[in-house]
Image (cartoon, rainbow, N blue to C red):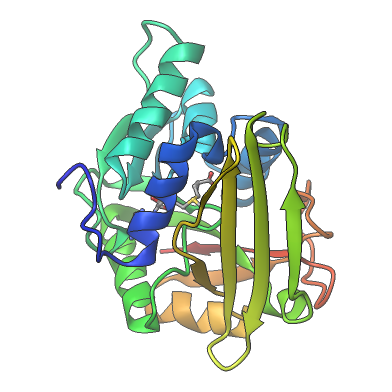
Length: 267
Ligand SMILES: C[S@@+](CC[C@H](N)C(=O)[O-])C[C@H]1O[C@@H](n2cnc3c(N)ncnc32)[C@H](O)[C@@H]1O
């Protein structure tokens, strides 16, 4: 896989690279939220110590790193070699000299061989990018091929019922992402396609940058169940959240309050 994407590549290959190149702080930190999410993943998936986990679209590795520190055998897969380097450096910074996750460049539709895994993760913006649901189905099928029988998948996606009413612009002031970075994000729900469009403008040291906009498919709970079943998964359960927070326990979807949907399913 070449190191830099072609300029005419789809947005999902360009946007995350562009943001990471502006500042690796755009790859979410291994922080308290990542810890809470990692706890909830284990609560949902019940993965025993030493489980084999693949974190797909792992980004800067915030979940992969925590799971490896807890003794799981972890593979982090991401389209972007640049972002995988951020993940590797983070691991090395926290665990000098210790072997950590294996970082593999790859596209989720053709997941690199590495299984069988006990658990696959698609966390926070790592699923929903493709224009056509046939591609999402292809991705789930390729993940299923690498899971052991009875293996589980946990996926976090956006709740369309919540986001349908949330067209808005948000200013992220300097100091939140990095001291010299200001961000304006504008969100818009595109009802006909069931997608959340997210445009980002970054000012770094006063210079304006506009990486490609993000467009993420936001499935309803019923659509998620159909999609995961069509890919061969069973016992598909969709849980909600209270606002933006990470649940301690599985909770029902609240149509307008739940920002995220957590899907868990077994092969
Ligand atoms: C919003 S980030 C989420 C990162 C991480 N899961 C987290 O929660 O911090 C989405 C990541 O998915 C990666 N990605 C995008 N399309 C992909 C694909 N088709 N296959 C694998 N990774 C992909 C991007 O490079 C990016 O690092």
